[in-house]
Length: 410
Image (cartoon, rainbow, N blue to C red; front, side, top):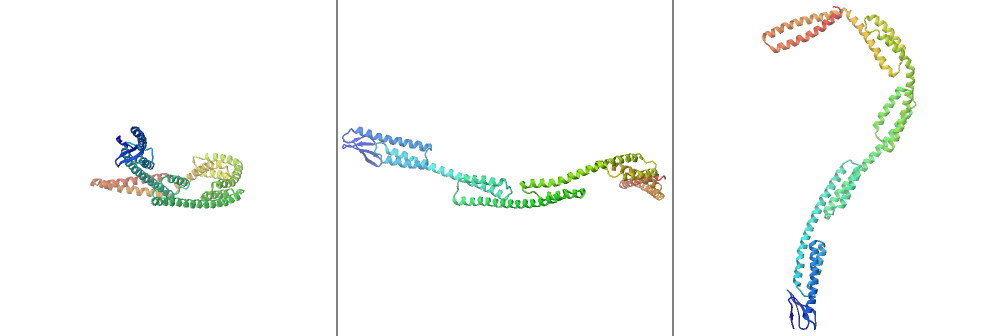
């Protein structure tokens, strides 16, 4: 007896069949049993396949399984469906599984596009790393540049690899920039080390000269020598930091020894000269009482006597020297000025020249005034202005010349 139950049947001999688009195929034996029970049993197996297909669909659509694992799972489950010892719509399950393949293809294309975008981003990022490395290689940031190149190398390693040809070409540029920077940095510090060694040697020579002068008592010449040494010291440039401070301390100690001794000697001299300053203050008072000068001859004689005693009084402390000398010089100039004025007033030749100048200027003014009148009459404004300017200038000269004649008593 045949028992047809939709997607399956049980033959009279108990053979269980499933129907698919490819036809019937045997899925099992159920001899001597209830056909309905047989079909129910094999439908249960089919229900298990449905659950497996449902679960696989959900996982794939949710993206919780990789494309590769999904493809493997689809193939495995499909093989289970095609060869299933079960009764049910196996073709529908196979179609559902086949419908997942385009979804995987879409995901493959999306992943490919995403990977291409990431690789392009990586290419741009690596180009930026190279650009910065090449700028550092061409620059002179010897301190921060080395650390920055290490940072750039870490960035490079964190970026995805590109295709072999592109990646190798970019790496060659990056590596060349790092190598160029390292070579130049080493050369720089090598030259710097040489300059510092040379500076150390030169400063040790200067220290030797400074120490040789430290006990000198030739205050003036040695002070000048120390100024010259300081100029040379500054021109040498720095040694290494560890050496430079110690070298400076030695150089400074030699200077301090000399200048301390010089200052002590000057202090002794200042104390010795303090009495001289008191004498000169008294002489200065006597000299300043000659002002204002009313009798040039008497003032000259009196000042000559004061000047002799001034010179005989000797040196004064440096702190007093400028004030005393300036005040004494003002009295001297006043006395000398009075003498010169007296001589000019008594000089007949100078009086004659001044009178002659006055006469010439008066004659020139008379001529200019006549020319001015003519210019005004003709209406020549430009000539009027020029003539007036000439009259003003000569009038000023005449006033000065007339004052000189008056000073001569004319």
